[in-house]
Length: 367
Image (cartoon, rainbow, N blue to C red; front, top):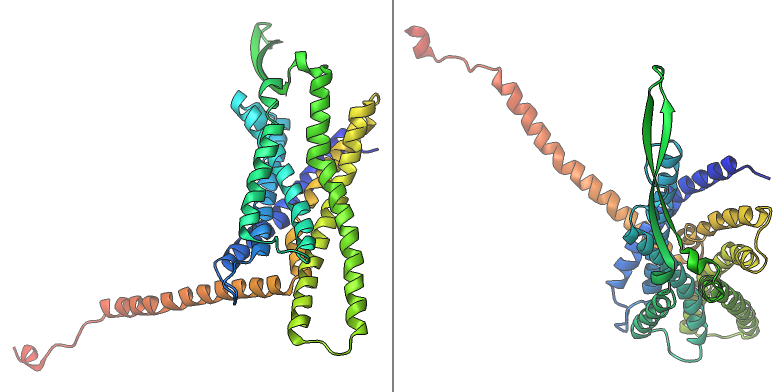
């Protein structure tokens, strides 16, 4: 089994990888999706698929950025360069704010993937995939999970302690060193409360993580069966309309993108959900479950880093938009470079004429 120091090194390596590959990919996804949202289709409708991708990418970016900053502060604390262990330990407000935001964003990201997968499947039979349904869904999910996690206002506690240490110097004079320690934790009176433990298990474990993971897995199985049925039906037909073929190809591209995203999410979140429920049910006597919970918690952030690459490999329209974005950025850089070159040439000519004297006229020579 890996040591605690090795676990910290593994966390830092994964944070660096997610920072180098996950954050730029999510930012590019947000830019491409917002650009696509500003454009209209032939029928004048906005692309709801891009809206969902933009929302998921924004949540992924926030969660990844928080985790990377948290890992950096933890490293600075380990080498005595930071006073605080994490962002939650800075103040009483940051204790509740970051705790709530982390839970809320993780739950929203999980349920947006689940709901979008389900809505995309139900959209075959009834038109549900609209901008209005997206706004209603995001608003309802935000209110539900904020209300469900509101018990943290009462149960969370923040303590700031000062510990005095006596150190002797070489002249045998005792010096007092004051070290401050802060704690963001569940209060002692609620730590062993059965109602608090039940709420924590239902909200943080079942509602935020387990239920969307299981629903996503079930919907994925149904979608795979339906896609196989579509392929068989299309292969049996000899004559098809071109519009139907394009619509089927577009649906398969979107479905394959959602399938990869949701399967990646399920594979990354399901181990953490299982370990978390085992910890709640049986506890941890020798520290094994707590150790594996930290590993599965780190691997959970892979799902927030690979969505951009899933879009690249499964969606042709997204690849085309990425190529157009890079082409536009390259053309802009070349235009800026060309616009600076004439100015530099003019400056060089002026410098040459400064040291050059015009020949004197014949009249001045005669004088």
